[in-house]
Length: 319
Image (cartoon, rainbow, N blue to C red):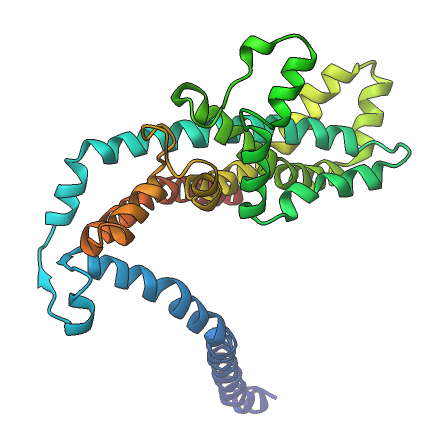
């Protein structure tokens, strides 16, 4: 009996070694298959994101004029373009305008979008139709939205001025987009109109994912609408709200076409946001190296916010 047990021990060791070897081989094959299956996505990201970013950075550290594109005679300038851009008052003015434009747009887009999401999460007649109509502003190209608001804010035939005259406020009627004190609020209003449907849709999905039994239990315990909103809806919506605000910031900080159509950055640079500043340096002055440096700096704020958001997500996932 003891001889049989001793004879089986080497056999078990061989079987164990074979099992480990098969497990490692399977893991290697799975890893290789993962690389092969993700290769198209990695190639796409490399061609459409990494290469343009790398090329833009390469251009930003060279002194490049429009004629140098054909000759390829680029002179390495190190950080000179960044120093030149950062020392220019127009750059910091564009940064301030962009921050005001982004903050104003995000605040009202999110607030109005959340209020509309709370409305449309309820069931009432024609809710689907009204919700579909809300999407029109988001579906229109920014060029069309800009042209529409340019007409609405016009001094002579604008709808807003006509409305003010109808209610007896003739003294407030003027050309909103040519007055430096009202041009930026006018541009922000147009961008709010464009962004509200996007915020509403994402927040509505978040509201619909909240378990309705939580509201039923709170109602049984005597919680009113305000208490249910404060203690259930708001805490449950925090991850969705953070994602919506992050996406809104990234989109709003790089808005170019809407501002370009409405004011072109004027009057007196009062609506000259950072993307317009980059455009003018690169494609009006044809200082491509400085334009690339300004474009790289344009990415800094959204990139910082995105990194903070991703780290927060990782912390929440780890807890």
